[in-house]
Amino acid sequence: MENKICVYAICKDEIKFVDKWLESMSEADYIVVLDTGSTDGTYEKLKADPRVTKVKKKIITPWRFDVARNESMKLVPDDANILVCTDFDEVFEKGWGNLLRKVWTEKIDRGLYTYIWNHNSLGEPLDSFMYDKIHNRKFTWKYPVHEVLWPLEGENYEQTSINFENKIILHHYQDKEKSRSSYFDLLKLAVEENPEDTHVRFLLAREYIIRQDLDNGIKELLETLKMPDIDNPRKRLVLLACLLHLALCYQALENYDEAIWYCQEFIKEDHTYREPYLIMAEMYNIMGMFTLAESCVKAALEYGTHKYDWVEKANTWLGWSNDVLSVSEFNLGKIDEAMKNLEIALSHEPNDARLLKNYNACLKEKLKENEEKLNNLLN
Image (cartoon, rainbow, N blue to C red; front, side):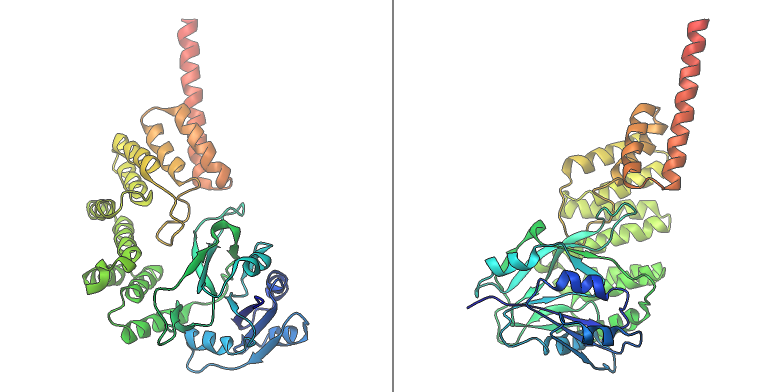
């Protein structure tokens, strides 16, 4: 059977993204869209574009992302066997369509690919992990928010996946003007509907943290760690994410002992992430324990391996380690080393005021050293 791709999506007031999104998605055989109530001309623009196979307007009340996704999937033509779900603020790098058609077989259920969730000021990838919204027809969407693909009743949970890694890359360019106010109530609903699901409980905890409610965030994280399936191998990333976010919460609260303890608990579970070492190094720098901070960064560089999962933090594999190490080195009198690491950090964030200030401090210290050397020679 000939492989045919259908991109399906939901949208509301996405007029500024339509052209770029359609250009990227036009490598598919079909594009279908469920408009959930646009008033800015998005629906009309999609309706008029010949690249759009079908667009339908439907108001979802009460609003749930999973219901909207499933309604949009109903628009997919019958002969499409590769379904690709994207949002209007996402674009694929070119060539994804032909690659999918070439390698897809009827035995494949899911396609995994690289998802770059955000970028720094230079356009370099920050949060980057494997995504799985390419699939066959054996799935439905589940959860009112942060929805995931779930096997249809009667389908085997052990799906067969193909990992495209960096051969297919999807970039996300978030519309930061859009409100996420509905997420909180929808996450509470998701927890009510799935009381034994550690993943949605963790997401609720993270939402508290995003809202700067660290006390309730910590409370939910601790409750998540008590749940029976937290030790399930499938929930391994949830366990690690809980430990990491507890460390970050206590770091923000300046409870460094507690934060360091959770970093150490993370390392006991998995010593091959950079994040806990770097968080500890930041705190040891604040505490004036610069040699220990330096050792933590070196451990991160030695043991850390790039996971491309959602536990990793944004700047881990760009300038974060160099930034933290430069602080340790400066305070240990290693000015040349500090300057080299700051130069690397600044190569990723050239307009960062704090990094520029630190580099200027190094220059002043270097000038002072040179003046002392000159004076010694003259005397």
